[in-house]
Each structure stands twice: as C-alpha cells, then as structure tokens.
Length: 192
Image (cartoon, rainbow, N blue to C red; front, side, top):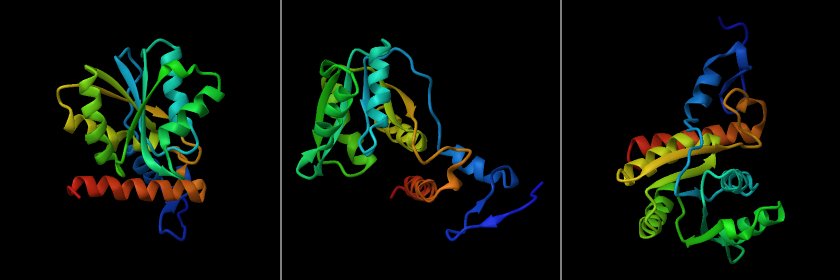
C-alpha cells in the first residue's frame, strides 16, 4: 500500500517503503554472483573512488584469484586508468604483484569488453570474476557473457558510495547513477 509518494525534480517516486517500486527498479540493476575460485579477476574501468580495485584486491588476498587484471582506458590527464588504480590499491596495502595492467582505448562497457576479452583469451583464462560497481553488475554481466559464451563469467559487486538498491533515491548522486544506468540498460536492450 502506498502511503506517501514524493516526486523529486527528476520525476522519480521516492520514500523507500512508501513506494516499493523504487527498491525493485534499483534492485533490478544488481545481479551479482558470490565470489568463487577463478583464473583471474578483471576490474572494469569507471570507478574513480577505488571501490572496484579494492574489492578485486581482496579477492586476490583471500585466494579466489591469483591475479587481477585492471582495465585502463586512456584519458585521465594523460594516464590510463589502470596506471592510477594500481598505485591506489598498493597505497591501501595490497602488493603490486597482484595486478596486471590492461591498457586500451575503450569508452563504453561494450568497447571495453571487446578489447579486454582478446587479452583474456590470449592469457588462457577460462574462468573470470568481473568486478564492477553494484549498479553495473547486470549490464556488464550480460555484455561479457554475450561476447564470451566460451568462458565462465561471474560478476562480483563492489559497493558504491552513492548507490544502494534500497536507498538510491536518498541523494542526488544515487539518483543520477540510477537514471544513467537505466538509460544504458535500455540502450543495450535496443542494441544501441
């Protein structure tokens, strides 16, 4: 039963339990697997906070994977993202030996998947943990599994500072994340 509906400037119905569809629509974006032993983890680009690389580093530390491939498109002030992410993880106490640079020029999850899957196959990896933000798990899993039906792909969620499926509407950044990820999800459904 809807007790109260608040419509914010973006036109999204809010108030948590007062509007249960908010949780369902946020929760739909999250489709994560439990960590399992694999040949490697792959950190997807696009997380300037470092949550993805730290989650992957924990997987290596905990023995789930022997190495962590760090996807790194160029464009961050003349650096590849992996050149910034790996020192960040080292600064947080993880050994540099965990990480493998995977530099590329991909600007979308689809472009990133196409280029890194070439390297993953070249390395002989058959079982892969894809590490990405919680809101990005469904879409990235769909893309990687579609492009690599020959591999076992498991998607592991890293926490996001602003997005939780049951509270994304509480802050502007969470609302923007929700809207952008749904836009990208719909674009994938239509093959855009």
